[in-house]
Length: 374
Image 1 (cartoon, one colour):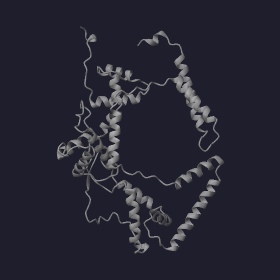
Image 2 (cartoon, helix red, strand yellow):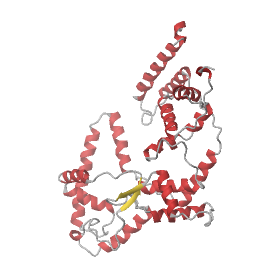
Image 3 (cartoon, rainbow, N blue to C red):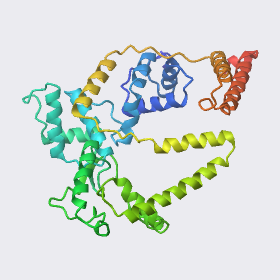
Image 4 (cartoon, one colour):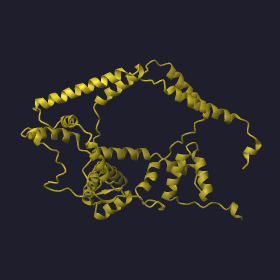
């Protein structure tokens, strides 16, 4: 039997193969899963079908992230862990801790592992979160030891509010000229660890310090006063003269801004006024996920993943896209609220409408018989 008629052997796809499939699907979004399977069958002599591609793409975030965590992409498969929910919860918690620059250690991972094991009703006799377990977990998600520089990114919002009140009481006993920001003195009763676990290296701070030094030369005294006032840590009773100076400076700045805004055309003036109002709006700070929230997320994700039969999204035809965009344009033109509907966007919509019309026209052109042969 000739080699052309030999059946293709069924192969096990490596992590590198799965990542390549995800990247190829991302770059060729118009192809369906059957076409993607055919592409890799022809390229590597695989024997995969549409359902295999669908299953891989349903977890594309997992396969695309493996390279960034420096795991070995040539591995054929990841050995399934005994407790996948525990592993997923730990991974979410570690990623959150790293994002907040919180110091991590093997002992912390062990303690957190036991806490999550209890949340998932895993008996102590079944898992002990030993040093070997921590080592394998770190290897799976690609974290390693690095040296710490600086401080954590954020703290609990509740702790911040309570800390401000305590600090106001302490600072009330001092004159303003004797109050300094001294968080870099290193005078700690117990020094925190100078190493932590991370998935990547920490960028250097020297260049940032140089930028700050240059910016400091252009900062006025009023700006410094305003910064202290906005922290909310100074005692309520403050130097009246300083407060009057700050208030007068702010009034002058507000008057100057109002004059500049009034000089703008009507449409731009409305946009700028809305922008200024947004500046005064409170900023929503994100609270870190609690252990209970992480457990709930893992359970919900596990329920979603249990349904393997995901329906493949059909490819949108050019005609359908054109008709949909025409509907959007008609709706846009019927609106009268210019603060919500920016009619300058209609230019962009019409641009893509013309593009879709051209593509539709090209698809209707009669094909020559040579076009069906390669």
